[in-house]
Figure 1 (cartoon, each protein chain N blue to C red):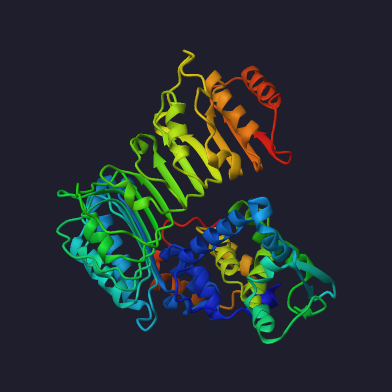
Figure 2 (cartoon, rainbow over the protein chains, first blue to last red):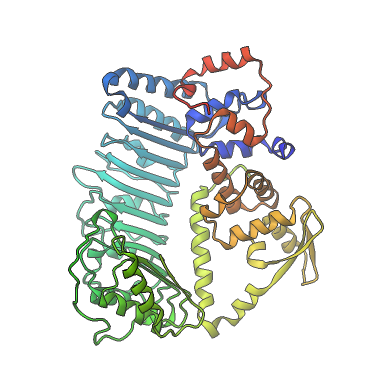
Length: 371
Length: 182
């Protein structure tokens, strides 16, 4: 085996190393002579800094961090590209000028993948005119004064807790990133606008933020949305194959689920989940609207549905009837997965399994799994 | 193989979407008989240990080295492709990973030797998605591990003298601070 690895070209080792933290990459200098200088060509920048452990000598340790980054930037081979750049700076002390300098170095290194987590510090706006960028992930940070987006190659954009005093202008952002395929926006400050650009290539979206117009995601194939956002839909999701509905606790309104499913004519995979932070546990049983009421079975269930997953299953009568109706009507169902509520005891689980297994099934080749 | 214009993560995304579309076409029973026939088609591959294996065309399509051959010759079912650098054991592992839609849980079950052999095979067969998948899986295994662990993983023999190693540790001192040497 040693022979096989010694025959692996450096470029493959560099590719593997590019997924590791820079600190570890630099430490490979002592592995052996062949690896001695290899780290200088690794096309990635990946630093993590947290002041949690250094509260008593914050400044000293932050300066030490800056020194590490500068020493790496100084010694690396500048002729090599810098494809991945990740900065996780979980610290109150923060030097915007240094970050700006590093980002500019990444841009001249033709960076493709940028990831920032900055504990509410400000992201250099130069990021938004990086023409080589393919993946951009922003978490827990602030953006200011962006008037210009030019991200012609961007395919993946994830915004997670991004703060902006005037809100992010989606119209400008989308106009500058026409090749976007994957959009996630969660707890992010979006500016309320009436006009926006279409994203013709968008195939996947995860929207858990205010003011993102649902028309933007109407052509996607994979959609994760939060429960409250599917009211008053005026159009169909014609291409949608996979849908995850997350709800914020309490009880599911199965009428709303049905309404949504009626707008997804080709859906193959349905998951109904719960925001983990908001799990609401209560002993009161809910005997609300019993499903199926008078409504017909949505077309996607009878003609397309292959996989269905129900999370936090408590075995209430409406939940059970929904699950039963899926099993009775979905001709092409392959997998029905039920995840029991964490509070359910063994006896309740046995009851759930007994009830679910006794249901009549239309598809003769599906598996019912329970956990 | 190392120069990858398109971000690999984006390639992965595209791949899963295509996969879903392909399956989407399959499920609608009668309308897609032609699709099923294409799905059922197999290609014969002879591995380094001399085993002839029939592999589904959907998997072979990811092997760009074989696609080049298929593109160049007018092939029929009797055509057999030798893959002299890949054992039947590793080819089976590769088939499982592709069928499992590159689930990182599957990678966790692989031994260190298997990971390395699949890496070499993916590079040889020019399977871009598999290569990215297995490279990140290897990165996950060695992430935040000690120098000794990484040496052991890659079968590296330390050829530095103690003085040389001490000197290197001094030059890049920050990279060795707070690291457990277990």
